[in-house]
Length: 269
Image 1 (cartoon, one colour):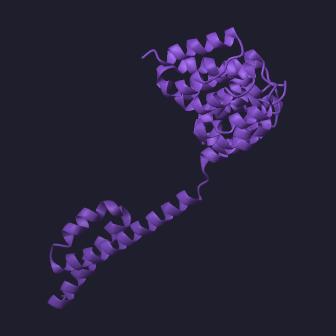
Image 2 (cartoon, rainbow, N blue to C red):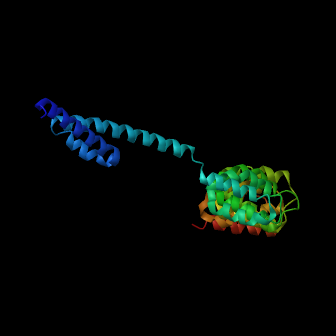
Image 3 (cartoon, helix red, strand yellow):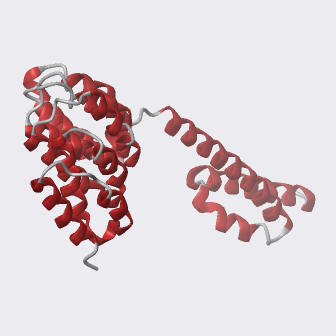
């Protein structure tokens, strides 16, 4: 027969082993029960406290391992953009890749350098510009390449409008270079091209287009006409620009009539 001391020791050992097995097999869900046991008699309290320490240590190591795993896991979005960017180099896959990148929007910002290179292919240019527009302000690094589309007689009227649309989605920062670019190329806009360009700029950025329009008033006739009609479309929202428009000296009755119509629109509030 065991003595009282030996019996108590055996009981404590049994309790300790039982609590340890519970903590090991159940883990964190066992915590509420271990906490309750920690308020019980001395043997259970001691065993439960020891088990709680083990569970807490295991939980901490699990959290650390989870954080490491998440940090080491590759970004699926970046991987997808990389695959689609690689597809842009292949003509048969290009249209699909462009549509997918456009659908991703700003998340496709890492593809901008590859999209800039794709602008050289005139067959895909429309879709490339639309994709840059879908990326939005994050596509700002592409602005110089888009502005280059305004050079010479290469762009069509629709391409000029598409370029203006893409620049507009990049924000006002992309438009600040437009006046200088246009000034360097004084003869490259047809009347239709100028009207399409300025109409699209106005539609995309609204009153923020005023500096571009004011600069165009000092440019060639086709751009002057595009700017005058742009002011007219903006109307009372840019009434403060009326003095600049009123000071414009028109060379003929047609242009004077266009200025008068635009001024009436600005003052129509």
